[in-house]
Each structure stands twice: as C-alpha cells, then as structure tokens.
Image 1 (cartoon, rainbow, N blue to C red):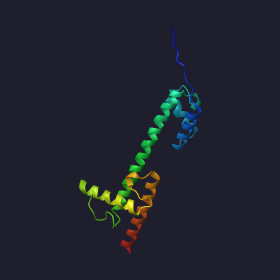
Image 2: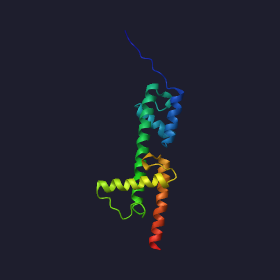
Image 3: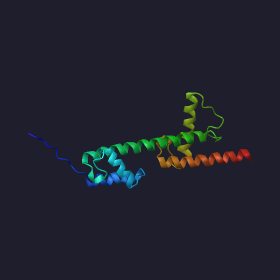
Image 4: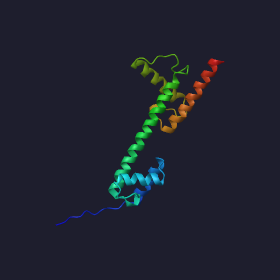
Length: 152
C-alpha cells in the first residue's frame, strides 16, 4: 500500500512574515527569489511555492541570522563606546585596562554613567541597538569636547 503525505501549503501569515523579514534584511525581489531557489534546491523561487514546513524552517533560520547580526552590531557599538570612554576624563581617561579587575572597573564606570547621565537611565548591557547608537553619539560628543579642551 502506497502512503502519501499531504503537502500543506504556506499560509498567508507566513508569506507576510517572510516578505517582511526579507525586507528588514535588505533583500530585493531578485535576491529573495534566488535565496528561496537555493533554499529549495531549485524546486521553487517563490514564497508562494514553499510548503508550510519549509516556510517555518526558513523563518526560523532568517530570524536567527537577523538576531545574530543585531547582536554583532550591538557588541561592536559597545566596544566603540568602551574605546571612546578612554578619551573622556571623568570616565576612563588615563586609567589602565591591563588586568581583568581594571576592565571590570572601567565597565562599571560606563554603566554608572549610562544609568545616571544617559537619556535612557539604564546599564549599557540592557540597551537596544537604537539606544546604543544614541549613547555612542553622546560619547563621541563628549570625546570631541575633551579633545577641543585639550587642544585649546
């Protein structure tokens, strides 16, 4: 006896979610079609041609990739903020970062500053990507001001 599995079609909600995710990731139509074709090993190049299971798997992978990308971007911003702190006299200027204890102390000073003097009033580790970008601009302005004072 031959058994056949019923192939469930992609849902309209999955199509919307996939299109939204591809847009967020900067894919144009051609990129999206190529990606889907590669994902399905040439079976289809359209979101409408995906099965429900394929769409679910693809959404999971795309969300994971997006999360990883955002995490890397946030980590990079935190490193830049940390670096800028060494140009700001009331933070880490003229302090070393040679030992794990120094590193922890320097991080604590930045977190204290962010809790008390940033617009968001929370530790840097709890900030969103957009908040980190704004705090980085604040640190850049402070560092420029310090540089101007030093030159003047």
